[in-house]
Image (cartoon, one colour):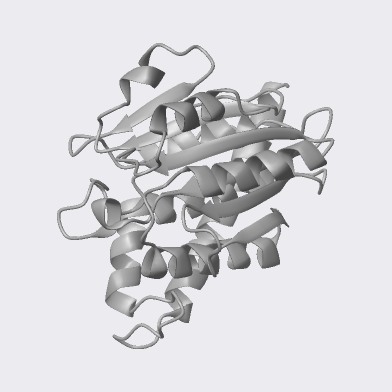
Length: 253
């Protein structure tokens, strides 16, 4: 990729990021939310200010074949409740910003992103979506619903679903798991081993910063720890890594 190509790719991504952020603000209804994930004007401006501090790298160009990325989210009380283990409380906003950023550089029209909440079945489940406006809106709505209805701390149901979908597709597969890993699975060590053996790229985002010992030195797994000291964008950079692992000419930051 030439310097001009890199510059143009970043410009496309940056422009789309700002356009979609402004749409987020325009959808706000006075000082109230509408119950559908559209924030009040005040809340939307606060999120916009937070996201404006985040700089993502060059997503590069589309790979040799399509990629399906599975974003697996833990929305249990230990993450979302008062005093929960989501130090920034902005993981979904950062995820959407990153998806939009990569979408701006996707020219193949083949890449997909899916949202798989720990809770299965879940109204927040979003099957693999194209990286276009409709797909991003479905993912956003799924994140809102999943956060409001999540109770499960079990990884296995979502992991099993992701494994099945990954085996059905000829595409590259990547999985990004956002959790505090306070798992209630009957055999958590077995589930973590299954995660490490996922048929594709694996990145775990440890909310709260306490990585399971079983994963700490596992070369099959990329790890990002999110702590109260983490800067805005750490979740976004982790998801960026998952979304772009199979792309070409990627510049992380």
